[in-house]
Length: 318
Length: 287
Image (cartoon, rainbow over all chains, first blue to last red; front, side):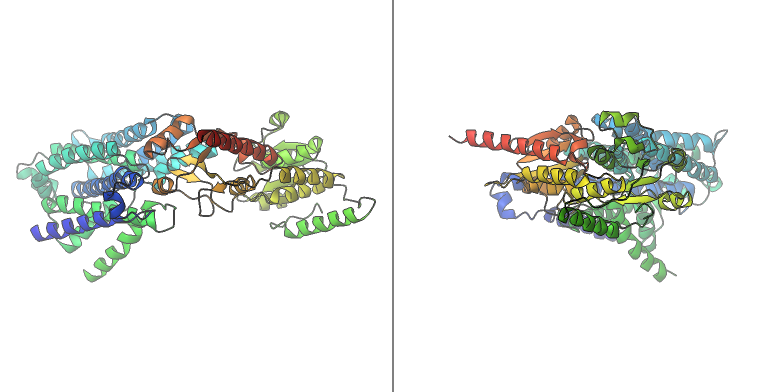
């Protein structure tokens, strides 16, 4: 655990250093230390908050992913399969179709509300008396996602061409325009959520052996579910509200960690956070520098980087 | 002429050019085909061209976005990015004109099934516009189309400027994320035609980074007044610290600046006005 955490921490710090050093415009340390105003602005007010927000978003998605996978005992679960992203995107698309993109902060707020609302709805749907059925939960998520796709399609058809771009921002995901306020908001929320998950980490670990088993060992299973789902969904909603939908992180990173190290939730939680942060920081670096002066969608690079690595590990583990 | 349905208008175009050259060489205008009498336009810039060549009485329907001249708004509408083919057929057109820049899937095959000829009009660049208008006029059997086209060409040329200190201009299509008009686009052509330098050095319509915006700050940022609100532009300037003090931000009439039609002349005139005003303030700023 310690060596794994150390390796991942070093990787994360190296990626952040790399991401800060490269960008659309070359910055020399000489210019920054020499007080070049433009260079300082680019580094401290554009590049640095963007890199840090990328790390936070990546950590969030991976933490939510590993929590959902553990809770549902389903390796395919990730925040997006449960409708969190669909809810956020449907919220954002509807808001833009009604012309709300013109008002600052309204679309992210509605995206956040959509993500939380979707999780609440999925949870209610999956509930039978006071028991939440993991299979029903997954099914409800899938069905709600289909519903959200319909809402998105209708909103798109009703939108002006220009509004489409605003809605697409959420569908494609981008860290464009990240500011220190986003970093502070998501950072604080993520710390609270990780603390909450660490608090139930041992219970979650026991849940991996089955609910009855966990219950017989004195675990309050329903409370663990509520805390796990609630905390992960709220922080995912916040991440989607600032960055849009960045795919694959929640699914890939926890599995990578499992393939290399261990399956115990207590280890998976911090390691996934570090791994997710590294993946998104590197993907955003590529999205920013791959094509001169243009930016590419970050979700493409999380998949491009993560999938081959994942497949090679999968082959070797057979 | 009317039966030509193939996508690339190249052959038609060459034919029309040959026709025009022939017309220029002779005293009497060459006999043009009678032309269509009922046409549906599927793009606002094509609608404007039809009005400009004086063939509005032949226009029986348009797409939902055609709103200029004002009377075009009252024509039957056949839909937006995905036009309703049944609605088109119900208007009994003998020609449909569509823009190559927005190709609705399935349009070509369904119109072929209905035996309605379809003509594609290409207006990706500023230089395409007069030729496109010649093609539109020829298909509608407008006899004095060379006159209209020559007048348009002259008017465009009259707006051409070379400036001693070309201002660096950035055209922001969208602000979050920032999308801009790059080189080799219609808007990019317009900037260069009016003697400005496009602050964006890449081609096409890229998503542009804030870093590039700050590292190569433009003198002027133009934004389309319908897609981008003043508030959205303020947010962009907030996200790019220090830019506000050195850049002039001007909203431009969106439908004039992004429609490659006869109103390119208006766009160029307005752009020259903006750039001239900038030069005056820059000059007066230096004692």
